[in-house]
Each structure stands twice: as C-alpha cells, then as structure tokens.
Amino acid sequence: MKTGQRVYEALMRRDPEAVEELPDEVQRNVPGNALRLVGATALQSSGDQCVNASTVLPWLFHALGVPAALTGLLVPIRESGSMLPQAALTPIVMRVRQRKWVFVTGALVQAVSVACMSLVAAIGSGLVAGVLILLALAVFSVGRSLTSISSKDVQGRTVPKGERGQINGLSTTASGIVAITLGLSLRLFGGSDLSAGQIAWLLAGGAVLWVLAAWVYATIQEPVPHASPAAEEAAKDNAHGEDGSAGWFARSVSLLRDDQPFRRFVIVRSLLLVSSLSPPFIVSQAVSSGAGALGGLGGFIIASGVSSLVGGPLFGRFADRSSRTLMAAGAAVASVILVLVIVVSRLSFLDGNTTAGAILFVGAYFLVTLVHTGVRMGRKTYVVDMARGDQRTEYVAVSNSAMGVILLITGGVSAALATLGVDWALGFLAVLGIIGVIGAIRLPEVSLG
Image: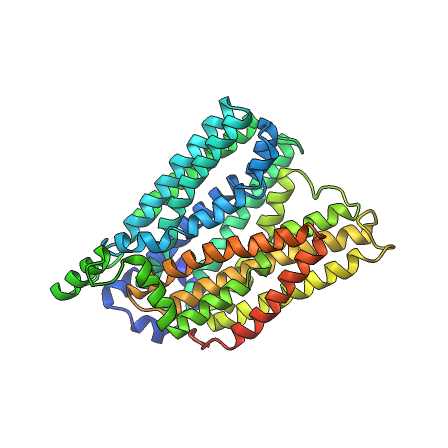
C-alpha cells in the first residue's frame, strides 16, 4: 500500500459500495486525488484568511485612510461578485473536458488580484487606493467564481459519495490550523494595530498561497468524460444559445422553474443566510452594549481559525451521513443564539462591560461562526450528492448566481433594519433561519444516511 493510500485510509471512513460505483481507474486514484483536494482547498482557504473582506481589508482601508463609505462595499463585492457571474460562465466551463484547469485558472486570477492589492497597500493611500483595491477585489471574485463552479464537479468525478463531506472537513481543519497560526503570529509580531505595510506583506503571502493551490490542483488525476459526438454538439449548441433559448439566462430560469428538487434546495439555501450574515451584527451588538473590541486583527483571525479547526472534523462525517440534517441543525442553533443575544442585550445588569456579558457575546460570535462552518459543509455536500455529471456544474453555478441576487436583497433588508436597531436585524435573520430549518428537514435525503 502506498504512503498516500495509508494516510487516506487512516483519516477517512470509507464506504466500499460507494467506491465500487466508480470506474476502476478512478478508484485507484481516489486516495491521491483526495489528499490533493484537501491540500489545494486548505491552501485556498488559508489565502482567504489573508484577504478576508470582513476583517483584513477593512483594517487595511483604515490604515490607508480610505473613506468609510467604500468599506461598506467590500463584503457585497466579495460575496455577490463571486456568485452572480457563475450562470453566465457555466456555458464556457462546460466546454472544458477536464474541469481542474478551470480551477487552476481561477486560482491564478485570484493570485494576481491579491498581488495587485498588496502593491496598492504598499504604495497607495486614500480614495485612489480604496478604488483600486475594490477593482482588484472584483476581479478576484470572478476568479473565485471559476474555482467554485469547477471544484464540486472535480470532487464529484474523483471522490465517491460518503467521503466528500469528510474531504471538506479535513480541508476546513487544515485551513483552521493555518489561520490560528497566522493569527497568533500577527498578535505576537504586529500587535493590535497593524500598519498598511505589514498588511501588504500579508496579502503577498496570500498570493503565494493561491499559486501553490493552483499547482497542487493541476496534479489531480481527473478522468476525461467520454461523450458521444451528438452530446458534444448539443453541449456546444447550449453554450452558444443555439438551441432556440435565449442562452444561459433562459437556461437558468428554466432550471429553477422546472427542476423542483433543485428549486427547493435554492430556496432553503437562501433561508440559511442566518449564520453568514449575523456575525457582524453580533459584534456590533456587543460593542453597543459596552464591550471593547474582540481583539486586534490577529484575534479575529484566531476566532475564525478555531471555528474551522473545531468544525472541520465535527461536521465532515455528519455531512456525509445526512447533509440536509446538518443544514437544518446549523440554522436552528444559529437562530436560537440570535434570540439569546437579543434577550441578553436587553438585560441591564448583564452588559458588555461585565465579564459574564462579554463571555456571552464573544461565545455567541464563536458559536454562530462555528455552526456556519457546518451549514456551508452541509450545503456543499448536498449539491454534489444530489447531482450527476455535468448537472453538478449547472446546479452549482445557477444556485450561486441566484444566491448572489438573494444575498444582496437579504443583506440590504437586514442592513436597513439595523438602522432601527441591531435587534431588528438579528430578529429578522433568526426568523429566516427558523423557516430554513423547516425547509431543510423537508428536503429529500441524498446522502448515504
């Protein structure tokens, strides 16, 4: 037994029946491919920590003297920018036989974009620096679209059902370890107030991580699918809109309208935004209740790393057993936590100035980010397990494009409600989460069970 296979057997709980469903050539390459997927995904996730739109880039904007109005554009550009283009890019991606090269291209685009941000951070300042970084972030998001579209398809072709959630879990754990190490280093050497020059080096390190991720991904042994000439011609026609439709947009609308299981998944996924949109509001509530900052930039990265480190092994195998249950459980816990935060914030004797109050707020922040790890892992595993072949590419792209629109709308509503008070935004997201729990439970089971 080769070293890679021994490592894989030690780390993974395998299902022989699921493995047997794969072609012989794919079976032989599963251990090596899985370890490469873990490595590449961990490198990409570690790079994400270096250019986090919720922590690192706002900190950089402050250091560069960028107008505060531009700071509010970071998360929408990062999140929606990576989702909205996916349906439009799908026809192009589907013409590439081996999807790993799409991922490699996307990773290199992200590397170049982050390198540009690093250069601006080193020599720029003020409004011009802010605009240039936002433009680089928009290009970065397009690169992320390519990696997102292709990664699920490559995983579906190279790893059997029952092991995909564990792959995601191992990747998340590895990136968590890197994030904690990075956060501790920043706290030790940079203190609580990093300069723009120090963050420029951090961004440069992130660019290197994406280059390494592209290199590792290129070594994956992805099988080349065999398609009949008629099927290839149909794919080309679809890619150019020559099948009588209006192209990718009409195809996306048709898929959402006619594919009921897929439509239900997209609806449920939109209701699970409770765990992704609420953490900034929890921090805001803590500060408004008298608590100090949760720590310097390093402290935020450490918190994110710990949630990944704990959530990776905790949720990976859970996702393989029942990804829909994991999504439902994560939304339920997040909603309960938000309700508790609202209640606690109204208790005059338990505010952020007290030790108990600070622990509750920080604990709530950590728990929501932790269950968000589970929700993300659950929905990623669900969409891979429910689809077959090129259908995965369409499912991932169309659902992400739809989520880009939904994210903008939901984020706008929650931000508007926050002007009335953070409690209103948290309450709105908690209600969405509760509805999402009901919807997730009613989804058909697609995992091994």
